[in-house]
Image (cartoon, rainbow, N blue to C red; front, side):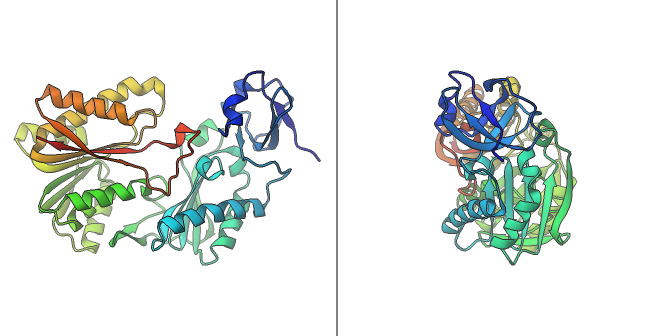
Length: 391
């Protein structure tokens, strides 16, 4: 049985023919109702076959293209795509067994996120098509990684609501212990896939954490939004005199303390506090550090809230700049896709001028190679991590 065919409106084909995998509902001609998660074929108004994709009538992204012209999606399809994705990670990180194995559209599996942590994986299905094929995805993972002991579905993302999907977390294969241990740059990390944020750990900052470790020898370091202590631990391992990690979540602080003890990093301490309030109080108290790291959660998920997000970035960067000793460093990150490197640079520069601090941008970091960027799709490029020398 042939697949349903959805036809693009006139002049709606350029971006899609160039390789962008999203077909928006407003780009499609009227068609008969099709069940959510169905496989469809997309054609231009002049008959060009754009390939197959997963359909969802509940989403503004009506079709997520798979860059395939087959008539079906089978376990073999997922095996081939996931093996290709894993080959890149194993080439880039030959000695590591923890990485983002699948980064959705960038790995030609739109709406699918898979993080590997040694013998365990966490999976996020962010589209109806992937969600309805979760069993197939799990079986493919077991085939390409036969030593897997457990897979957990971390279906708590707000993006599932936009797709008309239910939220929840549940084990889909084997067992998931309360805590697992991985290694990053010789630092041992005890993580919880059952209770951790997102898919367990923020693997996208891996190279930026290593950079901070190289920068930190002999320094007093403040790590804001420390989460599970990633930047703080790397600073400590890099020879920092003292490291203080701040986070509003007590669970994050407890995890950070466990990880510091696991590595014998006694110079690393952690406190629960709201970062905005903590920075303001530190300025009032006359505190100072050689390095301050700002790695906040995304302040905006859309262009509509970008102006407000910019004010938030301006506030924390201004307060941090007041607290950095002359000759120190500001490491400031943003995971908001709509805030560009230039925007973040301009914000920090403007705030430094307001308080008469001089800056030099010495390093621009991005997301780890296990979060590859699809050039045609700017949405896949989201993380920026800038280091400024501060006078």
